[in-house]
Length: 137
Image (cartoon, rainbow, N blue to C red):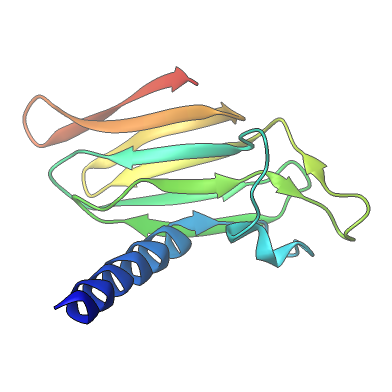
């Protein structure tokens, strides 16, 4: 019975780890590609939470012009954009933000600059629309 509980715990833990890892998005040329598993004493990310009734698509432009894009499905776990990057392991640092555009099937929900440690929450708004609520952590 104890082995079964240990196995179940291990399976749940590995599932959670995989879910978190797939929801962390990094700079395309980041040399610190292990940032998904790196533990820092501070947060250096933008969090996006989709609580709307439909899928949204995120387009981002880092401060050096590099681009990133990914979907966030309805009911998906929070997504994080890691802003701690550099081109060598020695010049990595926490960048102050990036330009983001978030689109729903019915139009643009958010477009503008997002600062490090911002949380962008996509929530239902009126009939078949969504709006973005931005807060800082």
